[in-house]
Length: 400
Image 1: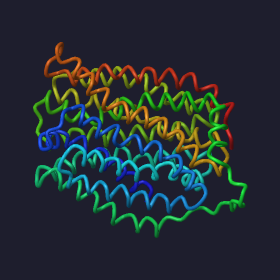
Image 2: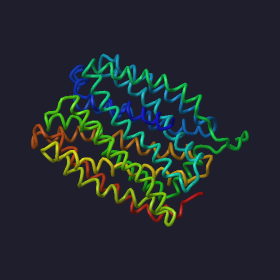
Image 3: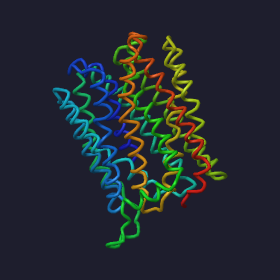
């Protein structure tokens, strides 16, 4: 059930990317305006509200907060389908961000409650399969529904499905009993921040993941447009190409990250940082080669590799964050990590890529967006370096 909800989390995000062209044409939006809808509009409240909602989940019911969050973001996803202009769509995406803010951090904590440390990275990796599955389904379903009806129907359909699932989730998923919080003894958010702030591993992993997400969210929003321009794909062909790459590569990468982290982490916990570092350093050149390849049949296998490696970090890094604080602080710690990751990654990535494409128009013309994406790949290298620096600190800051 957690995997299903997380799938809808990313499905509702990715659907915007595949529908970029029809939305921009219908609402007369520029690339910068659209990137603001896909990045800043979602990221600001999503990132900031994630911490208090995670704290609420630590104090009350984690599954209850997740179910409520799903209902809210599904409602606003459906409303995106009736937007008639830039500001309406911007505000509805703000609403989606408000809802999704309460979904991920409590889920991380709930999984950590259910599974012992030696199986935790694999469990979190299986949950994180919601990212490639959601990205793939959002791409292909959005493309088909838009082709058969229109882009508005795609948003409305996804919103209604999420609203149907929310009460089912609340009924099925139960919290693991935790010691009751005595009145006046609850750990304040500031205390959790204080613990994390003193741990170099937290900052290095959070900033490394943020650099990776900056590229990842930018590519998720703009790669469909790049494929349409470079290969002459229509909406459905782009959806099929993107969905297959995201699904196959993403599932393999996420699951491999969790499995290897659990295996190697038994001997040395530094592997929870080393594995993502190695993956990110390979991601940058392989993504560049795939994006610059003129033939779609050659580009497909080349893009398969980085689309697996760029999200391999999810199981190892989220597990490491869970072990930086005691059990009753886990959701709040995850919310703090996600706030940094999403403010930088989601807030800046799509807009930076759009801005670079505008700046590169004089040099690269119609291929400016593709080269803007390639230039952004340097952030994967920075992510890899930061994770390598975090490796030795992970050992010191581990809390069982």
